Image (cartoon, rainbow, N blue to C red):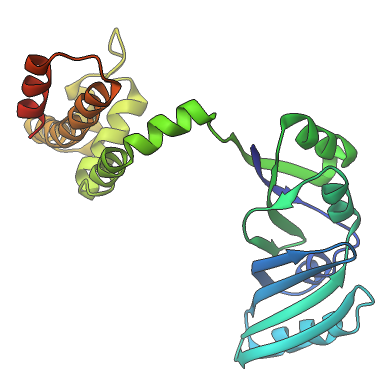
Length: 250
């Protein structure tokens, strides 16, 4: 499966047109697509109530908007449902067997789409059918094959632990580690040293060294647990090796 996140411009989309003319932002988090219409449920926000009202009046007069329902409204904010006829780009998405996989966000005359395809060929045909100037790919990923996904699922607890360990680094540890990586401190040969990092942060070399070591210890400890559990899950180990790995892990 191919997943795309892209900026897209459509001259026939009322949300893109209105976000270009008014200071509004659309966040459509529930999207249904059938043969003839696209149903979007979500939020419209604006800098103030007047701007929001002017935008809604324009929107309700658009021929593309077939139906709407307001669920909740407050100053500068509305939660609503909007049914509209397919845009040209949406027709192309459906024609190439694409589907919606995440929220759409429209602002400043463009819209972020999150869409998926069962194969790369369908994705490439969809992109080829768009004008090159009308889209920018923000992110593209291919979902792992079954064999890879099985390994991920089998180690999911340790993967989550590893990710959470990174998230739980202190701001100082995170900034120091990021700067060290970017400057080439961990490259072979080194492109930066502790003295240069010390000068960059305007703190002592000892302080930089301690910040790095604390971050490294936390990350390496979580990484070691992940690596050992991966080895245990692979099988084919004798009992002595399993005991050693479990003792080191725990």
